Length: 63
Image 1 (cartoon, rainbow, N blue to C red):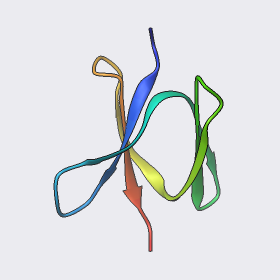
Image 2 (image 1 turned 90 degrees about the horizontal axis):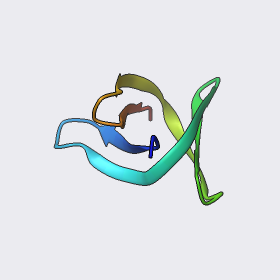
Image 3 (image 1 turned 180 degrees about the vertical axis):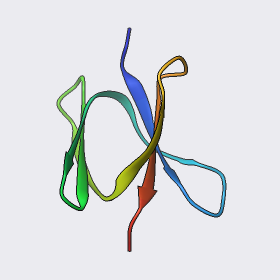
């Protein structure tokens, strides 16, 4: 499977916010995560980095 896990990064260790992410759609100040099961989460932040080999999306949360 090629889906990823999304993490919020900050001063502490990365925090898992969603598994089985199929789409990460940036929309201005937000990122909408959509899983392969249709679950959606909107996070105020920006994509910090992607680890394609590890299937991880790192998001820097904005206040």
